[in-house]
Length: 232
Image (cartoon, rainbow, N blue to C red; front, side):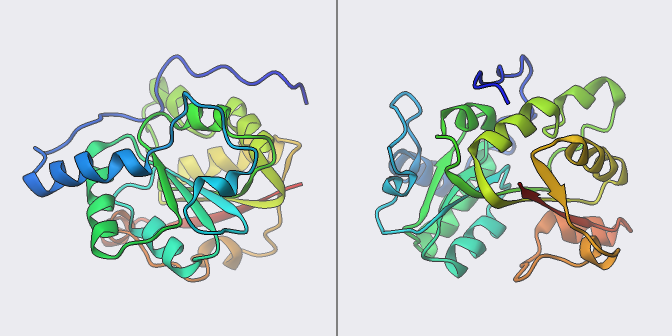
């Protein structure tokens, strides 16, 4: 694979940046907590990605589009010896996560509040031990498919930053996006899908806490799929 990094997309892969009016507690936590946790992509990445964290960690995982941060907070609490980087451009989601982090502090989390491609292009090669892309925006209209995060350029980005044996986990309740992802990732030479039976993608991940979006999908009759790919 060429050492030239993929160009950033001309259109962002996320939608709106703001939702409901930010309440005072959310504004306060965005002003006080976000600056300390936010990665500075204007500076070069550290020689050891573990140095981004205030506590010793033996690996670093990435979650792209963490929404309200339920899964990110849960996983970081379950794995205190692992560092976690969470990406969420939606201001309301970031505020929700920071409030949870204020209530139950963790010292193995850093965040990025803009396009994930910026972060992926900043990270050192082979530095990430896992990537989670959980319930991303499916961009259901055909004219918007180019904004789906799973595409060849971003899979190239994943392949560059992921260590051999690292897992890329993708969950969605939208059949067309699940099929889109299966086709795109299995065509990519850097990844392998090791599912042996339907139970492998119907069963939630080990320790899975569920999310608000997933609960809504289930209530509305949509069945989630949980895909796992291995970086060769």
